Length: 104
Ligand SMILES: [Zn+2]
Figure 1 (spheres, rainbow, N blue to C red):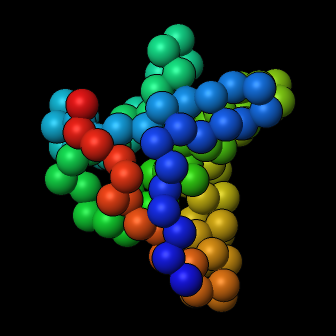
Figure 2 (figure 1 turned 45 degrees about the horizontal axis):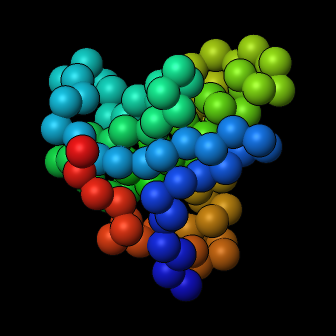
């Protein structure tokens, strides 16, 4: 089942805009960035789809981390995101469709 990724994601009372950008330091291992001040999540335009998918979960977990006032290390956020992706993709058959997300 394909699920369209919306242009805005609401976590609690906080609404974040999603976009692609070529200006992500992918060579340093970053494929996405979450800016809490501007409430934007940006994904590297050239990212392989599987990495963009997992980056979405990763960045949403960071939003939850901030607003739930929990402290989780970045490697643990990666591990949790990977487990969630295994559940969504490999077990529930969910595929992310990024067609609504535009480059900024
Ligand atoms: Zn992170």
